[in-house]
Image (cartoon, rainbow, N blue to C red; front, side):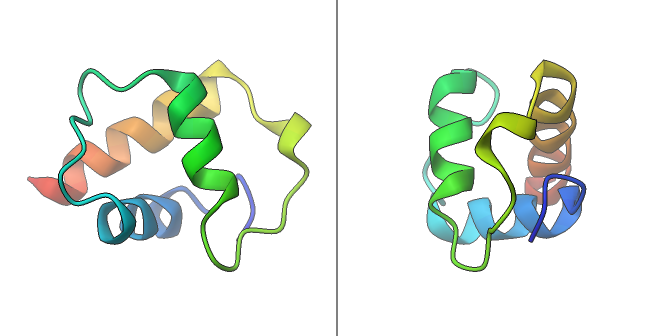
Length: 64
């Protein structure tokens, strides 16, 4: 997975952290959790606030 695989990341996060408070999640934690996902292999420094916001929004939608 790469940073652009927003939907796949959201699914992986929901599987790995089913009890997380997605709405009030700190981006530092979100970034760390994404890097820990199995199959994630993109450069950790390529993320930014816009990407993390998109992932958070997709994760919220995934839970909906």
